[in-house]
Image 1: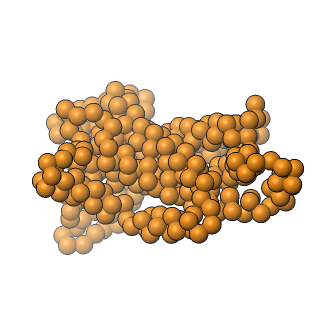
Image 2: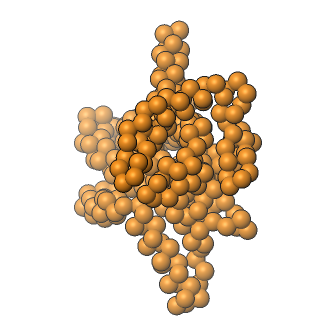
Image 3: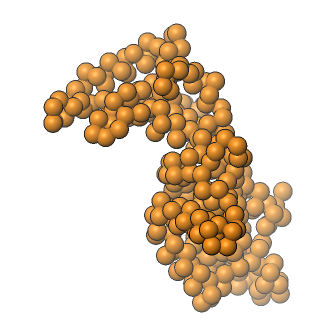
Length: 301
């Protein structure tokens, strides 16, 4: 009962944070060449959102002159974002754990150093490099390696953003797994298993692998936070019809310097809540994948 009450309090707190955070762009208004603090705009928007819950206007938004209902359009945007979190994330985690368990000694350190170098490169640079590589391959060799952006005639899952979203969980999980595997390899329970005559393969899977998966589960919030931050850039750079792109194209239709012009507060709230839901579903999927991996590695029922 206490756990349920704590969960409800966290959900309510998260909702309040989203409602207030979405109103922050309204705190400043342009007056000539300066910005004026206007808290009344923010409080008015928050009040209108609560009032609009009764008639559904809090979930209506405009694209151009067309009015849309968020609940009718959100499922498609939601599924696209979810696909680019869960599928690349599970693939990256699986490969990272697998290769992290296989990495040994100097070879593992070399791979980890290379991945750390690539990991430090901002995602938008890697995205531009991938897009340029596809264009160069097409112009020079006539090879079409993939699409550089989404269009309505193509499928939702594109190779380049899928690879980009897979890389970061792979690099992160490989680094964590390789480090934990090295520590577990010299621990007492591993030495005892070797003394009993168990094969090295059995030890790495059933003992070292079992020690690695709890460490990976503890890193899930960091991996998911990283992937969700990358999702914003990925959907924007590759024009993917995900829920975060809806935030930039519809909630913020204005351009600098008046970037809040036409800002749709109610849509920003709906999108941010949708992003939280995407995070929650992806976290459950990743946790289930790690539980399955632990069962496969250890043979536990």
